[in-house]
Amino acid sequence: MGIEVERTTGGQPESDRVWSIETHGIDPIPESDRHGAPIELFWVWCAANISILGVTYGAFLVVFYGLNLPQAVLAAAVGTVLSFFLVGYVSLAGKLGGAPTLILSRASFGVVGNALPTLVSYISLVGWEIILVALSTFAAETVLARLGWVHGDLALAVSFVIVAAATIAIGLLGHATIVRIQTWFTWAFAVLTVVFMVLVWSEIDWGTVTSLPSGSFWGGLVGGTSIIMAGLGIGWVNAAADYSRYLPRSSSSRAVVGWTVFGASVAPIILIIFGVLLAANNQALATSANPIGVLAKPLPTWFLVPYMLVAVGGLVAGAVLDIYSSGLNLLTLGVPLPRYQSVAIDGVLMIGGNIYLLFFAPNFVAPFIGFLITLGVLLAAWSAIFLTDMALFRRRGGYSERDLYADEGMYGAVNPAGVVAFLVASFVGLGLVTSSAPIFSWVGYLLRWFGWEDSALASSSIGLFIGFILAGALYAILSRFVPARSAARSAMAGRS
Image 1 (tube, helix red, strand yellow):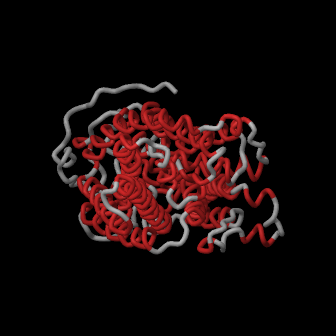
Image 2 (image 1 turned 30 degrees about the vertical axis):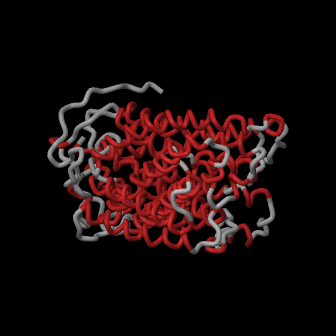
Image 3 (image 1 turned 90 degrees about the horizontal axis):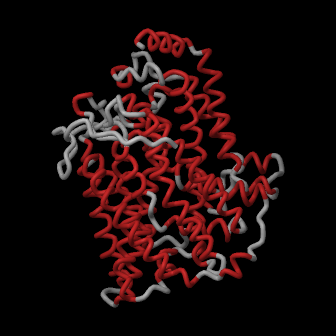
């Protein structure tokens, strides 16, 4: 992968110091405030993806997609690495433009037209906050109940208050604090996760593992790879540049991509495969509303508190990135607030969503998978347009920072190429995926139209891949015929 380590090019600026509230919002980071090195991205993304939720994804591959061990390993490796390469390349835009991801997206959609993908991104990030905090709360509640400290709704309430408070507090402080804490989280959770795996290793039934039947290609291997991509890299792609925008422009592009992909991929691949081994004779890992609680059952009492730390902390590490980036998205949509106040608003939404999930929702698994695939199609289409625009127009000249904030600038109010490509690709992609959750039952309309709803293709989530390819291809073609784009390209070429 050719990862390169670079020295930090100076101390932290006043605007972005550890344990202080970050003062930058969605404004571009000036060169004087740029600091750090690409290796920081390893810690940011490793901590966010070291959560035991990866074990649940492995269980999905066995229970819902019917894969055997070699197929599951292939789906885990390909889905994880491929999706995080998207995150790595979007991270390059942060270094080039110094602005949050969805601000840089204005170059592809126009300053006003970009509101549509920003809204999709915001819904995705807030949804992930709710899901990760809910799972963290379930995990803490299970351990507290087994220890006999508190029980029932009181245990849930105590767990939720602690988890939500930690998530919101770290998100409020901002970038520098997140990088520092994610570094600590990576070391601590890596050690505790290894201990957890050693203690649970005896639960693996190797006879059952080796006798797992092969899954089909479309409904099994392709579908399983899709869910891994949607749950991992595609779920993060809309936040990628938020954590690379402080890096100096001179930072190695290879190092930015390499450390991002390596840091984000190494833990999930191991945890997904471990989940496959455990789920071969314990399908509750895939079907339970509290899979992390299921994992806690065979653990000795002395390890329950360390397990709670790794289970809760790993999920909180991901929720912290979500709440920070969702706050930036809210500002991008035009809400006139300081960054830390936007995080507080997201915290309120997260609290409301968790009250429903923790105390009223009858089921968790089906809506979760539906959420992954539906939002995954939309984010895949957006990322294809963003990356195509970057490859065609930004790699040499970068972004015009001033014009990202003015609808009369070179990017215009609306870029028809980006908006049309996104709408068409999203329509086609959503029509080619399915969900058993009532809230997402409307997807798959093209499959029903052509009579394919019972075919292997219907369970493959092929719409995710088709949406990505179609969006990128349409944007590449349409952008050649949009006068504003041609003018922007010429202007950018003149600056380079």
